[in-house]
Amino acid sequence: MLEITGLRTGYGQTEIIRGLDLAIAPGQIVAVLGANGVGKTTLNKALSGLLPIWSGTIQFEGSSLAGATPADIVAAGLIHVPEGRKIFPNMSVLENLELGSYRRARLHRRTNLDRAFTIFPRLRDRASQMAGTLSGGEQQMLAIGRGLMAEPRLLILDEPSLGLSPLLVEEMFTLIRTLNQEGLTIMLVEQNVVQSLDIADHATILENGQCSIQGPAAELAANPALRRAYLGL
Image 1 (cartoon, rainbow, N blue to C red):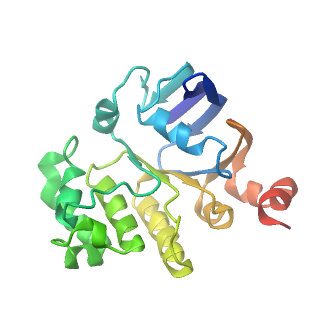
Image 2: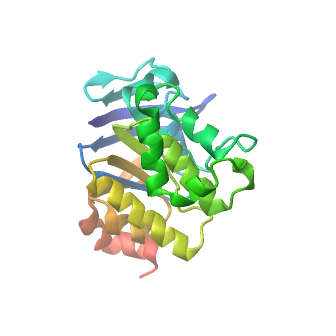
């Protein structure tokens, strides 16, 4: 579904992603893991058309994303739920959700809205409330719900557990697993290594803009070097 080969990109004259290779098959959860500053968000911006591809290729469902605008990429079904939620705080919950279908799946807006409210009942209760007044957990629900409104073929979740309480983190990972079991392909970009590896099919560790370790998530979870570096074991 997604194939990245030799990707290089960055900001100004500063290269952040240095020859990265990554592939995601339909129906998988692929976890992209790493500490702050290793290039996770830069990778997401390149995939979303917010940064130019300096060299290398990005293929999504057989089509190149080179030169594609963010609107083109959304229309193709590659949907990015960004780190920090990036909701519209002075708009209502309902308006935020409806904007999720502005570029894609507009004809199915009502059906997808009902689905979002079924997945996140608290959003239904707060449909007329200004999004900026929601709790952190509710804002994350809204951000994901807005992404689902576009009927994603591939959903990129950037740090969905960031800033959530332990209980909400558990709920978030359960939700991600459920969405995947319903057929959604997910790229999970996280610092939460343990729970990400627990639900992912495949995982890659980013270091200095490159994939340092890749493989089945279960194998990475048992990797001694990974356990020492990230789990303190």
